[in-house]
Length: 254
Image (cartoon, rainbow, N blue to C red; front, side, top):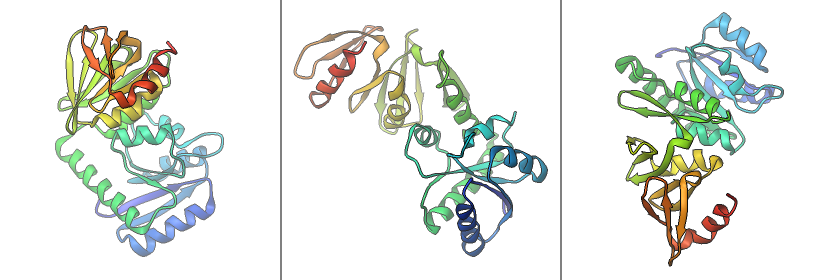
């Protein structure tokens, strides 16, 4: 990606103009070959021009940026998401370590995003690893379904696991150990905070700095200063005193 062919997808013309100007003046080696204001226009343009990179607005009328990606069997281009909203979609973007720009963004933030994009592209070409974008699309799709699954990146590829089969997640520094209902476990190179952001909306609760539990897999609560959550796999997970009140309030909803 030494000379990048880029397309900008945004429903607001002033955002397209501002980004194009920044790229032209401050980001040599990036050539904007087109722009689109809707998913339909963007799909036609991408098919025709075959870009290396798409700057993709998350929030657009009628269809959002994720709907565009679903139209491709295989996303052959790199993506840098642009958004003005801190919401569930941004949690998923952060979890999968995808490149994004939170509007309004600076020239430095744009340059940093481009550099990370280049590095990841070269690394994937070198080791033929699974694209974080593919993982993201899987998680966005399955977390919105009734029978939810999560795609977990491992050294050998991906593990697709139903969310209800996760009993708890435990922090081990910058890694997270995930425990399943079949008594197996898996180490994933993501910090616990990122699992908390992704799974809080699907009945998970962080009861302690080191522990995130699936409330659907909790059998009982043992009273104490903070207390303990007794999980379906027989483990007792400590509840911190600071989180106890919020935890009990949430647990009473089940």
